[in-house]
Amino acid sequence: MSQILTLELNEQVFAAIQQQAQTMGLSPERLAATLLEREFTQAFKLLLDEAERNTARARFERHFGTLELDGFIGLDNESIDADLGREYASTHDE
Image 1 (cartoon, helix red, strand yellow):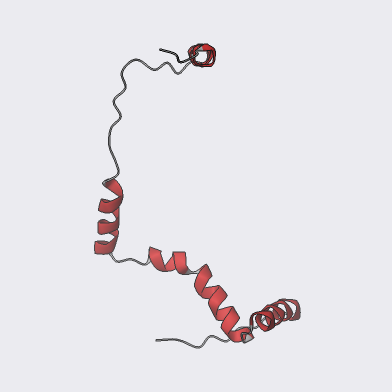
Image 2 (tube, one colour):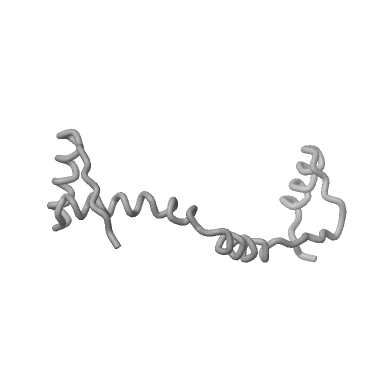
């Protein structure tokens, strides 16, 4: 189902839409409708009902997990710099 929406645009905006529509072989009305539909695609997604939101959240949460590291990872700059220095100096011929 579609709806009719009447818009009032200033001359500069209408001229830009008209010129672009002509270049694309569309009517200004069709181009404006297409641009609005594209702009509000994200808004449509926000209108999901509760069940769809829960399903989407469950799909997203399937990617959650844990990370197990072999050893302690230092977060201070000196230890990071030392680790980087060792890696850059290593020939990796082990």
